Length: 284
Image (cartoon, rainbow, N blue to C red; front, side, top):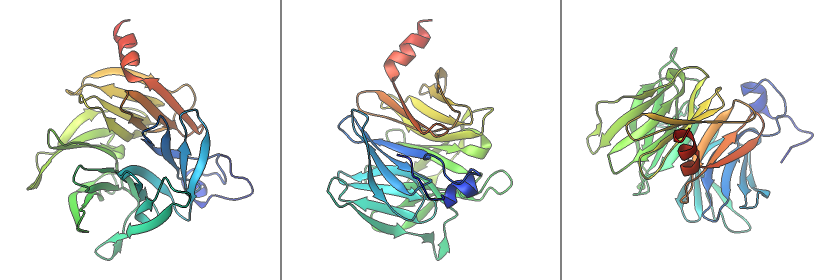
């Protein structure tokens, strides 16, 4: 999937190089043993089949960072440059890109990072930009199916990956520069009693996260080369270490319990059976 003969403005600005192999993020299962994912550096939506074959679904002028299914044939994309976009007719020969929203009340987004879709079709998306402890102005938005944009939470120092726990009425939010996972209890009246669920240390901070049906939380720790696995209480169960680089950017889990991790230093996709990994660790 290497791109030759071109310079990636994103890679030059964010990574200090002209042309990385690719910078993988945002994996989502395709329901057939494969994945859709994004290449931030080259503005590409990629597909990997169950047997590991790659193809480019769509290439465009943007920086896609997060990916989620909006419906069976539409992917929602958090694009750092373009805003909230969708790719329609994903399974056709000619998928179409459409911008849903490029800012908040006339102001451009700082730089959208990741997103998740609720059971009612609402899109929860993080606006990270270059925020951090020096500038805690990141936001978590909810884009309603009727087109309303709601600010769920603001004053966040680098909001990144997120996961919905609709059964318990909470949003788990990776806050990269705080090196923590926040738990955001959320209901019709808005957020309340927001707190840290997990405090990490080292590396750069949490990036993408995923929540299993039993409440198990997986956290891709950027700069550490690890995906942490926590139970529903926040107790660490296992650390899944990447065999190559340290840029563990995102993670997803499919309906069979297979975990997929994007590791962007080496442009790799790593996979492991979660139940087997946990059992092996706890059996030592």
